[in-house]
Length: 200
Image 1 (cartoon, rainbow, N blue to C red):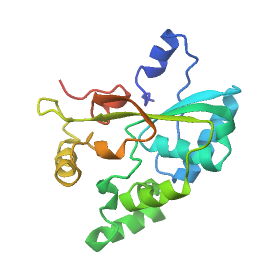
Image 2 (cartoon, helix red, strand yellow):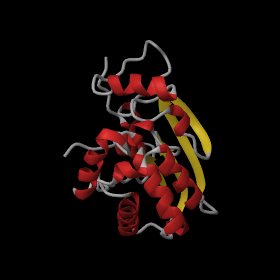
Image 3 (tube, helix red, strand yellow):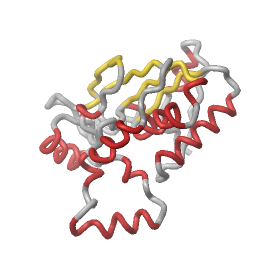
Image 4 (cartoon, rainbow, N blue to C red):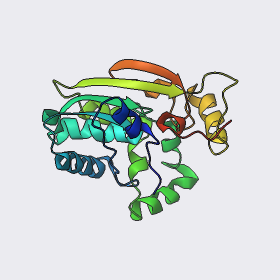
């Protein structure tokens, strides 16, 4: 099985950190994924941890901190490329001719997309406050420069998002990724943010 965070845990180990990469169910809802995250952190046996979460994982972690008691175990949450304010991609098919496709996806248990539209994230942010005592920070990634390569798989999506939402990482608008303290802003597509590069 290919690692999601390519080389990142090993790099953190080389810096003296005790790092673990966990896997969450890809298509599940945020509450389901958050419960799994809590269970996996419980298994580690550490009193306190720092969580680094990419993309949807950032929302899972925020939910677990606010709703599932994880805040007592976490010092900080750093999100990378997380759609804190949604992505217009997830609104496609909520209405109109593609809405039957979304209904079929829900019937098949693929519900993660329902959590990612701008409207869904507006509700989420109102209902999932930051947990007291936890440091929230973000790394914001995207393609701002014309000379930055875009992976072929992301190119049409990137151009669509640039038209409707401005600079983006191929899946998430840059403007959606800010939450808490901004640690860094990097020139990186959604894959490159976790160590995978598909361009020269």
